[in-house]
Image (cartoon, rainbow, N blue to C red; front, side, top):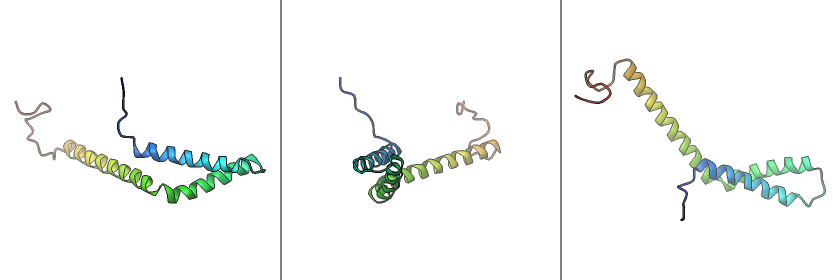
Length: 100
């Protein structure tokens, strides 16, 4: 039986790409004779710089996803506040289950 995963979240793709880029730079630096901590610092800085250019599309997708979530939460918060203040659009006698 074959199971397929649904679409992968842009945040997960971006995070895994950043980790992969870091590991690729670290592996490229590994044969060089220098302190391990210095290799790690160089790998972090180099992978951050490369990710800025190479992963721009995925970073923009993550930003768009987050902006959409913020917009939905803000709209839901405003709807709930207006409902609590008694300003919602439904007549008062409908209740939760709708008209009776």
